[in-house]
Length: 292
Ligand code: NAD
Image 1 (cartoon, protein in one colour):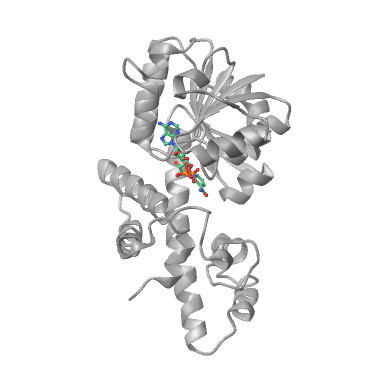
Image 2 (spheres, rainbow, N blue to C red):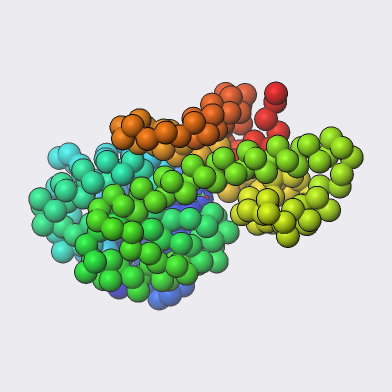
């Protein structure tokens, strides 16, 4: 299969490399040269711009930071919908607003494209290992068509519902994750203040009722676990500003629906304080170091 891939960042690059490893021809584009160099070194074909990735491909995948990047890629006179072949299956894996996902999918449908939203969970480690969870919104037939390809990048492929439903699940999941990372950091800090070894504390809590993903697989305290951002100076991983974006999506979504998310709002404020202190590009587990 011939695949176009736009957005070769922390997540997009390893996802695209797994498609190359699976024997597909992948043409990619990113704004950052070092990402393009790494992509080319692994056998990817570098395109001159985003529209060029969609030339003569069966599937176009995008993995961009936020809603505005996705709108800009697909919509308008210079966007993909105006320039690509409508036979191309469009898969947006970025985490964006459910409403924007619905708007872009409707615009795609009006031009006879089939489009699905397929945001992911599992972090950069999951992207590298090909074990991501995909939360997919769109017609069942489109999801089944995409499934064999998504299985080259992920282990669990869930059909959440119609267009935008994948994003709704993702927004709920990441609001819970942001809150859990704060709670886990707070509990670890309290234990350490009492003189506890954070590894002993983590081992015990991981087998107790406080267990959660942040504690067990992505521990925010440096030195407790190998190969997680906290043990690499909080480099790579999932940025504070991306978590802040997702909490913003959750709070905005809740406000539109008159749903109550007081902890989501508090988490948003705390990550914002942490970002403003100059930590926006660090992994979100660096919130362990949030100053009082
Ligand atoms: P990232 O910032 O590392 O990568 C995004 C890439 O998109 C960058 O390399 C950037 O140069 C590129 N880009 C931006 N505009 C572009 C354009 N017009 N054309 C081509 N490339 C463009 O972000 P990431 O961590 O890879 O995350 C991507 C998406 O996945 C985000 O929506 C994020 O919320 C979501 N996500 C991230 C993680 C994670 O652990 N990092 C996990 C799950 C979901």
